[in-house]
Picture 1 (cartoon, rainbow, N blue to C red):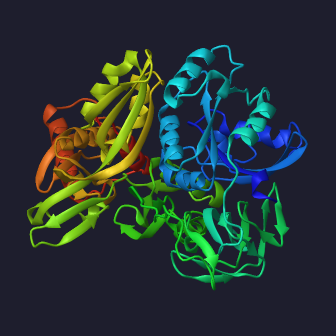
Picture 2: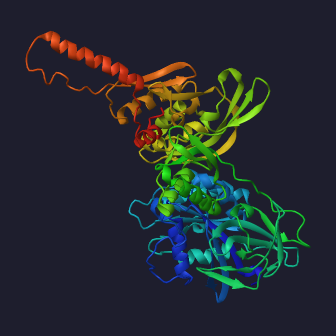
Length: 599
């Protein structure tokens, strides 16, 4: 196919603005799928994606659209729709020449719309603005159109109006993709240069690599080399991405497709890497490649100890499909054997937990999430701490740095005060306020990641009645006064409940955790002390009172001294029991620690 008849494009949008539904309509209009297929959101292959209304893995599909009697090949490269996966979004965008900027007419422009818009502009993509859900009664078509005109500097006729649900305006939008978005401009006879925009593991065929060719061509049987690790492989199969694979003899300049080359692990074919020929290949890679950096760390343990071997196998299989998941073995006195895992964000953690439960049927407990801290000890040694267990004695620490995020919150003007108060409570440093229009405002903060990962998003939705949207990216590490808080039950430290927080928050967080534990740990026959401590200093305490057996039940009269004697005997017994009694901590207690209020 000549490059002038190819369009590589993606759809960028905020969560739940109808991206996957619009992709379904595109597939129907171009006859890739039959009308009214049973499964909605065809490109969202996981049940989880459909339930949460988000795209987790990026997908790609090839469509043929006839415009003015000429067939055009349209490669739709779907992008993940959550802030945790922004690197994958950037690589998917880098493999396109244009993007449809999809905005929900009933909700307007939101934080991730802006974030993805900036990502698209950084990749020099031609933008095609489109309004979705115009058929809804509460859709503010004129207002949203006005916002897009202000931000993009476009004319009203350049903004397409569609209803992905009913199919209204979808064919016209595909025509606009052909007329508005540019064709690829690669060099046909140059050494091949292909960008990996996604890869996943197939049980029978190994790693399937999805690529976009920028220069040259690749053929079946070619020996290829990956730039990041220098590994070489022979192409066993190459072809186009339809609903099923369509094997071809070669992929030419400007096309998108798949390569199967007997690659054993997804980690060897990283998203963003460049593929070329082993001999006579290109001399430099495509820009923008990065190793994924975990931002949130948590321990994962099986609820039932006998599931540990299954968990080892399951996490290894999950890793084959998710190169950004990092894990190492860990043991806990309270929870037994498990893993310390690194995730891209809290959504990534939630997805991994859900997949372990659904796909491998292993119920697990995740410990309190933490982030990566950089520490300099007094002896000059630099260390990285992402697990509270590894936190050194404060006497040996010289400085601690914690990660700060560049945060954008878009919210109606009515709720500015609520948002500012919440951000200040979470140690946010306000940078600026931009009025998008007379109704909505974008507030920018620098905020510590440790304050965002717990329940900031939930609180944000609560104080704004669901109208606020959030986007954040890593900015830098900054000096901070953080401390490790230990939780003690009856004088014994429970390592799985320890957490790291800012010293100003230590008391309130410690009190919240002990209070929560006192509500979920059942009463015993002796009094239980729940304490939060920094080193040897107790900063918060809650008490679970003892259950009391009625030892006077058998006394139906008689002298008071007989009753007193029985009560004293019980008192002595309780003292002895407290010395030797062990507290039974239910699994719910570990889950309750995660839900404890962090304000």
